[in-house]
Length: 261
Length: 244
Image 1: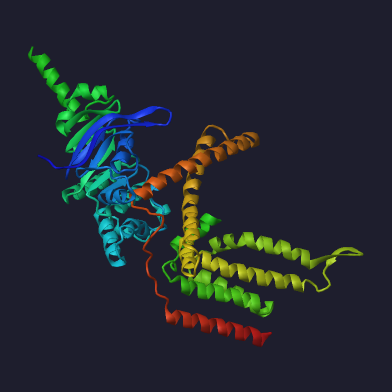
Image 2 (image 1 turned 30 degrees about the vertical axis):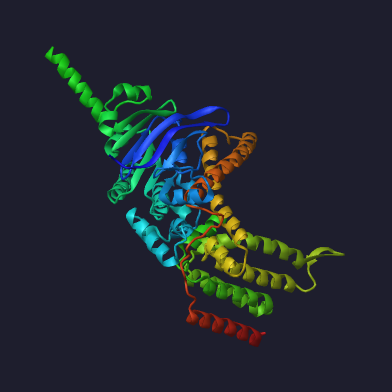
């Protein structure tokens, strides 16, 4: 039995104007797993992430962190954010300091760590993302891919148990995406639980252990990536198609069956 | 110009020097430019500031001239009014043959060069941090820092919007350009608000509690450097007073 580190139980959330982003959604996130929250744009995936780190409070239902609910007090939220890091889709929404090292030091200092420990955390986070050479660079002079890795390093330096990533590969080219996935793979190997939103079925298939398929404001299908992504009906209901390689496999098999008849 | 200064400051070989060292040099020269007689005092300061920027801080001559052009333009325009007088025979050279105008040009351009020397070797956030250490309230320093950071985001957004408008002929003539500019400004405000809201979420996710704490690299001030600067500035003052 996998230990659940984060759990959403029947959560609902409507934005002002009545747009229902989450509609009785339930989801359990196992410790140490890589979970892809898969769905088309505008499905409410980012809204779910904002619930999973306590930024938004569900209008119905509840979110449990390590089995504990109702952590919305000041102290509770501080504890929550210590354990669950969030990386937004656009790194410019997260980087505010003048240099990379200063920006990454922000989280550890907020945890109350002293300068020595913070310096060590900054170096460790930059090394994990392969950007130690950028430490003294100005944040506004970085490329988009570099900014993205700095934003992740900023969350990572707080050593969260869970890292929530909103569309981590959005805006990155193939090389940039590959470098980022390698870095995330190393984090996962070190025990960090990763939850990322995406509309890219190929990415979910290549990287995730499990997939939560979003449809109509709730998780329509949840399970091991290979199983969920092979379920063409469930994918179609969410407005998605199977990964290219799986689709190729389906077609080859179908053609072989037709040929045999 | 702001962006050019930022670009030069970020790339400056003196960027990692302690702020105290650069401030001692530039502000010391600034004080000399203001208190010494314009000739030869301010002229010497002007020469030293230019030499330090071009040779010491390795700023390109073209960049340095471009940065000096705007303030020098103001100085020359102002000095021109001192150099001429309206007499009974019409417009003519001032009674002092333009000595006062020359003094203003020397003093003002020397002072401007000293400030530019500090600006092109020190990124704005370092200056803000320095002011913070001198007692600027944390709240004001944080607002200044965030404003500086937002400036670049807004400029990026404005450039992207302008590019999109140009590609659809939004700037093809003066009238359309003006209309597009209005739309651009109207778009930037909600974008800035959205951006600020998302930044708030990003900061909250990293346990922001109302204070922007950051680890700034410690850059000890070199006593040797300070000694050299003080000696050089004292020598400059001495030479200037002796010559005058």
